[in-house]
Image (cartoon, rainbow, N blue to C red):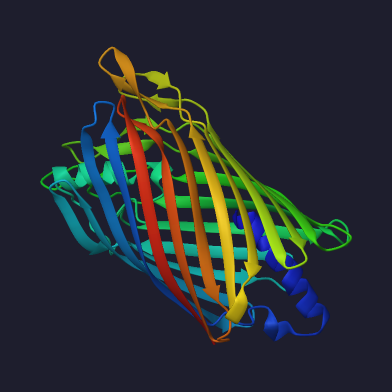
Length: 380
């Protein structure tokens, strides 16, 4: 998705610089977004027994400030309240700081960032169990983890026009992950493997300029996860299989209606559990979303969406065999309402309801989820 966003930015930046406005590359980028969201999922097994309600409230804050004509600073954090069973945690996540620079000519985009360890680590067993549920991708929690130590990334993206209506982009990124202590009372540190990613994509606008088609493909190679031993040295314990993510976006404007279709696939090769020297299948995840939006009376833009998710299972070793986890079939519907009449402030109210099945550590559950959110974006 990053490549697609930069390709769309490339169109805007190119048109602005063609009009001689070098200072307008980040025009309108002075902004602050604050909000609040409540997400909850209820899981019930096939005998009607509830696993419990997994509840999370988040209050994200993002601030963007142009430091120069071509340099943008973004800082983001979020307050988090998470509750499940006997576990409850109130904290903030790691603080994300990033800098983006657009080189003269508007064809190269350099981004560097770091996550500062302001989030909670050293979780107790109940909190660790809660985060294992929050981290289920299919549930889509905004803060699936609390604190994971220092991390950093750097990426370089090139975007250029192939024709008057098509832009091609290619990028390379490196994501560093530092060690952290995940469990309270343990001296061991976990060092998740760094990531190397190659991205490519294109963005095409039709002759009529009413339709747009974008493709974004990201291939990622993961270095080995390591765990420190009693001597303080790190030993490899796990290796995630290489992953490919493909996003296809088609948007169409018909009179006062805007349509968008999104298809996403995540495919990963087998994971390697080094302690057992065996490889196990990883989940393939397919997601689709259709949305339609229009302007209602009194300056309210309404968007209605439907979404589906289909995940195959991860295999996790258990004794001499394995168990399956993470497979799911979920359908969702929702709506967003944005007030557009106030130029410097844009409030958005959103709601989602989802239902389906999800398997966690070999047990299949009926799952129902509800999300409600309110965000305010201030532009200066």
